[in-house]
Structures are given as structure tokens and as C-alpha cells.
Image (tube, rainbow, N blue to C red; front, side):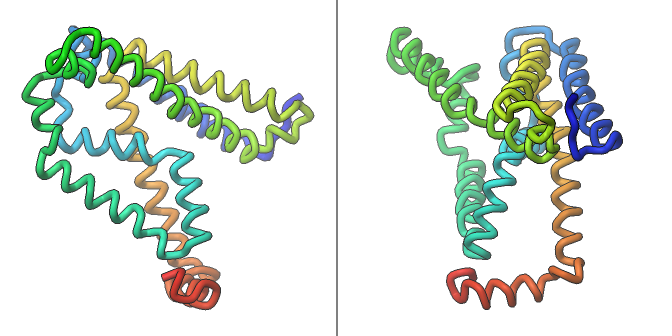
Length: 235
């Protein structure tokens, strides 16, 4: 019998969120009427929704965990990394470097450009490399997320082996993502990314507010602690 440190309310929140998000993603399938709708959301996302989707995709469990660990180890100095990333992203978006040209060509996938620029064999090769790179890169995230969930919920202490629990959670996450992505295409991805963006923004904002207002933390205490423990290197 599986035993966890999650209460019934905790599991209710998790299940409702996962099922609600997946159901919403599948539901928007009725808005998919062409290959363009399915692959690139009909090119109707707009700037605000595209930014929300980008943040919702990047600001996931793994990102929050490694950012928290690097922030804990390096102090305020770690903020240099996201600052550079923000400036580069804003620069690319404002200038339209590469992006605007790809938009003018009305491409559905990046490898399409290589067929226009070279030939179909180069497109096939580029597509194969993109798939391989994507699987090797993104394939790590479900496993890492499942590992965090298994230990955070205490499922690994239920008597079952940790590997079995993690594999089961990984499989469940992959099946759910495949279900709404395959059925709803890019429209489903945009919708679920937006929902995730809203929830993460509220959660992250409230979490930061609680830390700053907590008697044991607070801005002054955080600054003084880093100054004591890390000196100038933490600032």
C-alpha cells in the first residue's frame, strides 16, 4: 500500500490541476482546422501569449529547483545569469534578429528553411538532428520532475523501490503530455502553457512575498546573512 506525506487536500489539488490542464488541452482540439493550426497555432498567438508560453515552458519544476540551489549557493551573484538571459531575449525580440526573417518565410518548422536555402536532403538531416537533440535534452526533464515528485510526496518511503515509483510517475507524465499535445497540437500547448504561466506567477509571487515578510527571513536578514557568509562574493 502506498503511503505518502501528502494529505487528501494535497492530492486533490494535484489531480484537479493535472486532469484539468490535460482536459483543457484536449478540448481546444475543436479549434484545430488545418496543419497550420496544429503545428504553429494558426500563427495567431500574438506577442503577449507567446511570451507567456515561453515563460510557462521555461519556468518549470526543474528550473525552479536548480535556480533555488544556485541562488542558495551563490547568493545575489547568481542573479547575473538571468539578467544576461533577460537582456539577450529582449534584444532578440526587439531587433527581430533571425526571427523576423523566419516569420516572413511563413515557415512551420526550422528544417524547412534548410530546404529553401539548400535542398531536401539537408532538411531531412536537420530535422533528424533537431529530433535527436530535443529527445536527449527534454527527455531528462520528465525523469527529473518525477524524481522530485516521488521524494517530495514521500512515495519513495511507501515500501516500493524508488526506481519503480519514479518510472511510474515519469510514464504517467509522458502519457498525459502526449495525450493533449497529439490531440490538440500547438493550440493545446499554448493554452496549457498559459495556465501554467498564471499559476506559477501567482505561486512564485506569493512565495517571494511570504519570504520577504517572514520574521525569520525578510530582506534585511537575507542581505546581512549573505554578507556574513559569502562576503562580496555573495553580492
